[in-house]
Image 1 (tube, rainbow, N blue to C red):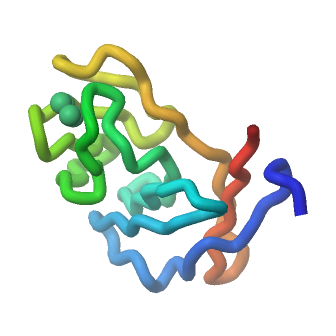
Image 2: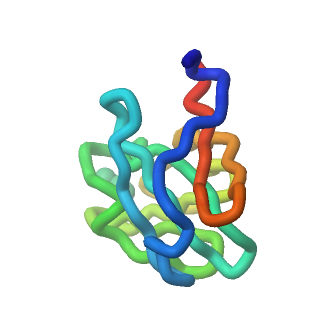
Length: 106
Ligand code: FES
């Protein structure tokens, strides 16, 4: 399987609405987020320092870093507030029945 194919990483029923789940995919920590707009996948590491976003809070479509409070849009990984200025990577995601699948890419 290449990284450009969708691979199953979790079950949608494992992540209640408003919650996140960190999964390890090919040695990478990916944060799966269940917002009221659906499921999204982003890198688990904040772009500012070494904080894990899985320890932060999901508010709507924003994930808040637990260390200095930067917010990222889970739909595209964009940094929305300081002190983070760089976006985090977001990953294509699809839900097939109850399977959450993502494409890791490069
Ligand atoms: S480590 Fe995330 S905002 Fe500083």
